[in-house]
Amino acid sequence: MVMWLWTVAGTLAAAATALLWRRTDVPLLVSRLGKGCPVHRGLDEFVRSRPFRPSWLLSPSIVQVLLFGKWQSLPSHLKVRRETFGTPDGGTVALDWVEAGRAMDPAGAEDVGQAFATERILVILPTLTSSGPEVYPLAAEAVAAGYRPVIFLKRGHGVPLTTPRLQGFGEIDDLSLCLNEVRRRHPDALLLGIGLSAGSGLLASYFGCTGSESVLEAGVMVSPGYDARKLFLDGDLKWPFDQALAASLKQLYQANQTELEPVVCPRRMSQCSTVREVDLVLYAEPHGHKDLDAYWNVNNPMREFHRVAKPVLSINALDDPVCVSSQIPWDQFRQHPMGMLCATQLGSHVGWFESLDLRTSWYHAVAFKYLDLVLQHKQPTQPVATRTQDAEQENA
Image (cartoon, rainbow, N blue to C red; front, top):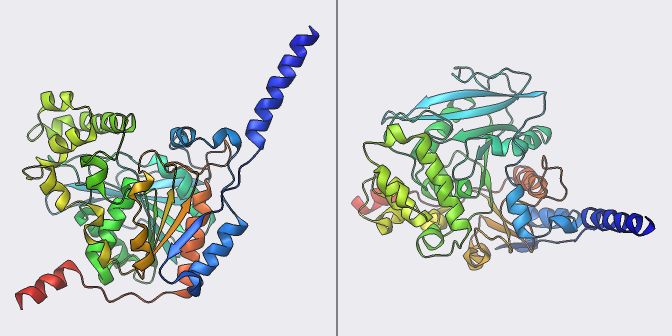
């Protein structure tokens, strides 16, 4: 009996130690201007005073990546109101406004968001197959930090698919349509963006393709993969994450199978087991590309990164098992006037959970602090040409 009690006590003590003992991970910041830039200096001071401190139990990267998306609820005082948009090709996309004390309105309404004194609207771009709830904790934290969060939902992602095509990985037309409409309705608001994983790829594509014409004043990329061609086509994404993400994409296909039937062969989809194989059948071919090389030529987030003209922070963990650390373009952050990198040893992929309270993550505070600093010091936009301006110059 005594031995049994000692065993139980030892087990409980070990569990308590695993939960309570913390590792301290002070991030590394990289930017062209370094501490001579007030934003860099302010963020460096913040992360040094507030480093990432996960409990021992949550330190392994596999634990962190499995925890993402497990909390999909909003606090009772927050509600979601949906606004839908039709695209020129007949597609449907949506914005989910996270507001205080309003009822859900899936059909949308013309005056969505009008009740806000919208100083700072934060546009959230979810992960590759997300339909919104996975980013509710981020949205709730954004409200607490003084932002007006709105979640962009791609066609077919919790939104009815009304065209036989999904949005390409780096295709910005649908996002631009929504952002321009938000800008039209809120001309005095400050628009900001934050993207998670593949959402950060879409954000990078938007900033690069629009240059100084971006309606977003600044952005944060969380766990970006940077070079999607290397990640998905050349094999940087490893087993079992490649197979798991492919299975998630196949679930997205199954949810929209009827609408995609004219352009996607069910038999070929059933045979796909990697992201590369799914990308060819589900995205490249329906978009008219002869192969994946052609598809990634116009969808890789890094294709226009040198044209980014608004301040952007990228948050990466070196133990990320999905968007691996070899993807991080260190030299670009040392040279780009608008880019800043925050790199931690731990944190995994869209993780950075410090406890089992999955409603909050360390990266939330870092992202909001960065955006606060950017707005406080308001860096000037760099005069980087857009694709349209380049084409006009070439034709002149």
